[in-house]
Length: 148
Image (cartoon, rainbow, N blue to C red; front, side, top):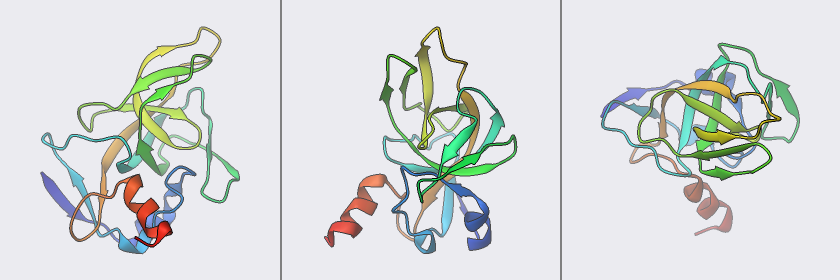
């Protein structure tokens, strides 16, 4: 596993999706990557948009939409998705290229897509977000809100 320090400016310039909206960017200190890093549902990831597809916009943390462009860096969460009218997708087994399967910020590997939708927007994960001790998962931000 590689641990790379990340500066706050880079995080602030990334588009923060709605799903990880409760993430406190100040707590993020590093990115985790490497062949031995296996993402889990809820893990937050910094990724780069590589091809625009079905989701040409990202719903941001404030609820407004922002157009996506190739090269944009986005902060999203890994997750499984079963939406018969769009995509069936699962969390991949590595940090390889994957798909943006929901405009609210879900990264996954698309298994099937409905005939009436475009192929998903393609993203390249850069690394999982980490604080000083561990990777940051969506469930960790929920605990902060509840005060546990």
